[in-house]
Amino acid sequence: MNCDELRDHYDLYALDIAEEPERSEIRSHLHRSCEVCMAGIKRSLETVTLIGASAPWAEPSRQLRRRVLASVGLEERAGIPWWAAALAMAALVVVSVYLGVSSKQYEETAGRLRTEIRAQTAQIASLTEAFAILSGPNTTEASFGGAQPMPPQGKVFLNPARGVLLIAHNLPRTPVNKIYEMWIIPKGAKPVPAGLFQSQDGRAMHVQPGSVDVARTAAVAVTVEDQAGADQPTTQPVIVAAVPAAPR
Amino acid sequence: MLPLILAIYAGPEEHALIARLQRRDPQALAELYDTYGRAAFALVLRVVRDRAIAEDLVQETFLRVWNRIHLINSEKGAIGPWLLAIARNRAIDYLRSSAGRERNAVELNESDHAPLYREMEAEILISDQARRVKEAMDRLAPNYRTVMELAYFEGLSQSEMSAKMGQPLGTIKTWVRTALQSLRDDLGVAVTS
Image (cartoon, rainbow over all chains, first blue to last red; front, side):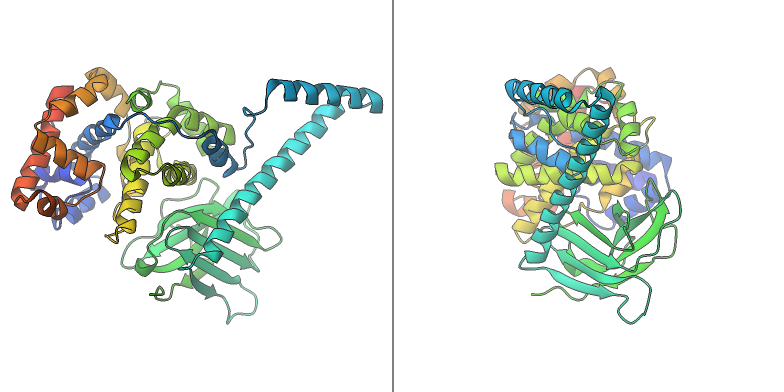
């Protein structure tokens, strides 16, 4: 179909309610960077975005900010009462003077502790997500590398409501400035990026939280990509775990 | 409505924020949350109508943005509209899956659509109409407003809206297009040429 025929369907597409064959046709035009369709869909998306402004005002809990930041390893600092911070600071000064610790040493120690706390917070958040996936009632399990002696081995767990958990060992060290990227591969469709991770001593655990359509997932794969990740795989996968049929 | 308006009107420093997110600066995520957290929550809550679920979905949204930030153009990207689109997609996807309807239908579009979220704030600012979105929605004829709300906030397909409203599919299609065109005209967003 040409752009003129698709023009009337831009708004429907932006609202995610376009039907076939127009939906696929528009996607096809967008994939080949059709300037006419990109401009038309972008304009429709602008209007659709504005519709969200009619949602009534609502305030999330304070914990939400903490949860969001913890999920990437950043601790929340705003929630500490001023008197507690002042008390802690005073105590640190007294202890520092008592121990004869210089301010530079103190800063180094504090920085190291902050880094450790940040890493542990991220690890706890990740473990919490992993546990939720493992303990979910509808979790599907897939193994990889079992028949091979050395290459990466491990398991993938997919939970429709919680996300995907990958546990691997025997992972080769990534080259400098490279990182592992996980992909969820839908049946008959392009791989979808599912997060970046690094290995440690050949081992890795990676969680991609969020809902996943297990029945429509053919496989979970891992490739080595540049640090920023990729939109589509650019290297041969080091892991491919075929997903069995989801439990009914 | 205020949080969403503020989100859409985010300042020009947003591109620096995208660049910091792409460098994996966690503090940048804190700033992103402070700018868009309430807007995303208000939008998601309107869709799922459950605070606990809305907070879970907003957390997923920010993590998703963090993991896919490389898809956004750091020089021209409009991270606010993109984030809100992801938040809405998460919410609609939840709604569809909890109702046993088609799921992950909007999931795959996020990556494909990311390049389209660029230079949006500027155009919306030029239009100088965004503060009147609510009034514009209220001014829509009731049937137009209903199809907009069913499509945007409840994620109903054309067929589902047709069944729910007892109208032929063609009528629904026309109402959706007319409603969006009315909003565009009312808000001063230029008509697609």
